[in-house]
Image (tube, rainbow, N blue to C red):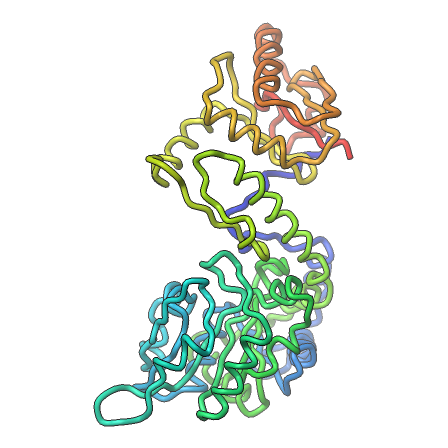
Length: 412
């Protein structure tokens, strides 16, 4: 059985490039992009602009750079930028709107985490002698820190219409706009048509190793190139990255529904744990956020998991994450819940295999206690084999299988 690593659920920023991407990067035709001479970058920028119904696009190293270039393009120093209070441009972009554009963020708290016109209108201010005027309205779709929730087209259309009436430009932080399009059953051109500029990420769920895009009018993108250079984003033979970006753009949106289904499965399983407070229906895309009930704090949970991890073996076969306690100590209630969560989120049928080849087929989802008993029983049998390597060591060498007590293998 092939062991490919651990499923890392910290963020969709830890995705890896696909084999097709790696091959395209190795074969990419390149030139100097600062001179506009990299053919692969030029193709990526054209394709992004076409897909979003814009005149031009600009390849940038990061989504943060794309957002900050857009703010600089659409505002003047001393103006305010309206956004939701948990927006990426406020919390995770190092106050660059103030440093680079001279603007103040007007943060608007909302219950759902997404802005409506009713939220925006009361905080719009005209130019005057006493306070900063509104210069820009910024939306985020999906909304990262509110669990990947989507802003629907009717909500955005109302914002677009009213912003135009007041002469206010609009920017979209669309880092995960393809996730929104997948969840809403729409396309990115339709969902973004009312914005002056749109930033979206090629990394994250689309799996490119590096890069984001900014799209808008040809005039704005010409100026954006100057701001990109000012921020240190003028890259040279960067077609090796753009090649992966093209595959991310053309192929990967079709697989985002798989991430959404997995996130929902994860949320449903977590909801069965007593100490977890999660609203399953709010998991609309690929982000799962939950709170803890009772006296258990987040810090205590992390410490508890760290303590458990010293007695767990983690392995992944295909796309299945497993964890099996070592030793014969009784399972705590928390251990049973966590192991139950793991086994209930795998795809049947399964098979347990110890490091020395003892197996146990699992046509049905096993209980945590039964897995623990299996591990303990065979650990006792194998004490006399300490120091011996298992059969076929080369096959599983990437995970040093002689350190793995039990692996749950997905047989489907």
